[in-house]
Image 1 (cartoon, protein in one colour):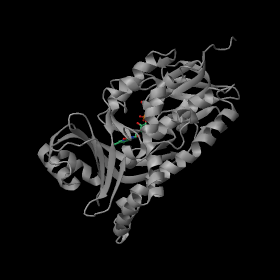
Image 2 (tube, protein in one colour):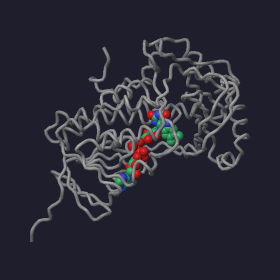
Image 3 (cartoon, helix red, strand yellow):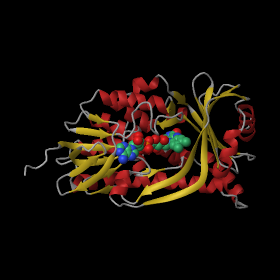
Image 4 (cartoon, helix red, strand yellow):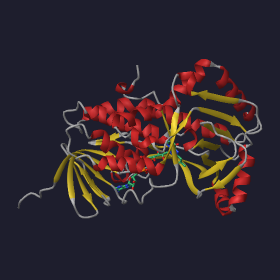
Length: 398
Ligand SMILES: Cc1cc2nc3c(=O)[nH]c(=O)nc-3n(C[C@H](O)[C@H](O)[C@H](O)COP(=O)(O)OP(=O)(O)OC[C@H]3O[C@@H](n4cnc5c(N)ncnc54)[C@H](O)[C@@H]3O)c2cc1C
């Protein structure tokens, strides 16, 4: 019997969300045969094509510049010139400003949909085969390759699989790899609002007993609102009239931006942290939410995923075999610290500010003051928030 002939690739990316689509673009200059499998039909449907905005930091901005997509992203990007972190009913405030580090912006707030569309348009201009809609159904690893079976019945073969298929990664499940899940029993209600005082490019995060409320700049003095609340409050809050929602949000946030008026569509996202027990498996790399899915309190999830992307591209640029044990070990070596640091920081932030243990409030308040007044601590947090730790060295600015 003749052996079955299937398409052969060097890299197959499973999942075409923001991370998988970025990776297609990042791999384009390398002389590799690349395919992407995406279950939905971008850019119309799928979890990535929603109403959220994403705050990207300076590290992600540098990566997008190197991918050549920054000019297109800039058309809908609102610069974040400073951040202001406070706790409701307390005086302590931590402030970070772009001028303090000689940058025009600490980062940018960009509609999720715009990032997705821009990346997909760029991906469509590469030589990669974009297989969508198609769902990965089964996979089999051998010493030299991985065989993938799609729901269309098509089989393909690749030397490396990059799993970018989100927090509930099918690749992870097919390989029997476990994940540590932390259900915060919180949800983020996300919407757009207009405010009566100029936001001046400031991103606000205010910690309250119910959860943090973040207000980030958008064009035309609009803002995106990310309000984290206990999950059992969500249904009632989504049922509030627009006027009631705006009133409650204003009372929770305070008066720094004047009144809240006009509101967009409200969507709610349950919040969990999911950490894959492994960053690699034979001929497989995990990237983005498939590797680690974080609470959005520190706006780090996609930024971290984009550093996964930059590192995959950097490691593959010099790899003789994209799926060799050496290549995987190099990826793991370069991603582990950043991943542990950022996920640990995010988890601690959620826990410190969401529990209601008496006495902790004073400590939190002192923490914010100390953060504002202690330059080395502030520098360390600033560096992390700018996303410069874990960035491949070619992105360093002189
Ligand atoms: C409310 C909220 C606000 C956030 N704000 C920020 C922020 O400001 N800054 C920031 O950095 N991060 C933020 N994040 C995190 C950010 O949204 C995620 O980190 C990022 O979107 C993850 O992208 P991904 O491509 O890894 O995963 P996903 O977006 O989950 O994409 C996975 C893709 O894989 C596809 N797929 C799944 N299974 C299969 C299969 N079997 N076969 C083929 N395809 C498959 C899916 O269709 C999907 O398109 C926020 C998250 C939330 C919830």
